[in-house]
Image 1: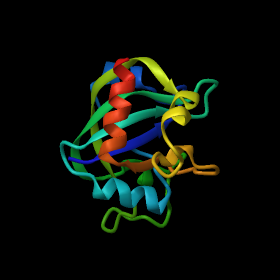
Image 2 (image 1 turned 45 degrees about the vertical axis):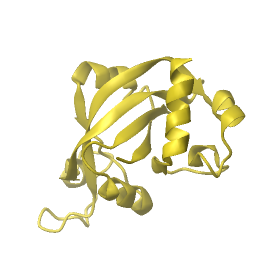
Image 3 (image 1 turned 180 degrees about the vertical axis):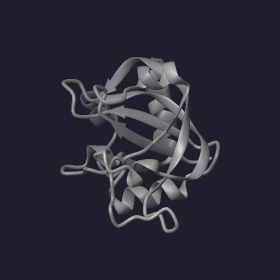
Image 4 (image 1 turned 120 degrees about the vertical axis):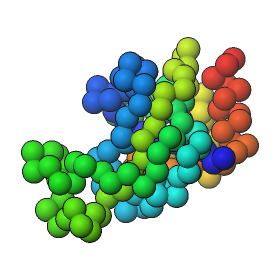
Length: 151
């Protein structure tokens, strides 16, 4: 099993939305490196749900990958912000996963807490200028995040 971090703006789609819906397709990713990370995911992998672009950014919960190699439907929808006119149904450019809610943390693990426990090399979201919305998390770091979430 691998660990990942998925970023979303909570006013667009937050951990409580996933909790209510139970599962979702993680659509709208339009960065090739992030897409490649999505394609590397396996069923059963765990992902930390990170709230970004908010007054209190941080890790808000946990979800599990339940389906891989999902074609991102938003690439074909001309009304979508994520429409890609060069992508075709017979040759999709954007792939994603379906995730399932596991838990919302009692308290968001904010940036200040994350910076106290991890270096930017350990947790990529702490890197200055990092804009990736999908990134891997090493097992030792993931275990420490889970410990912090239960503290």
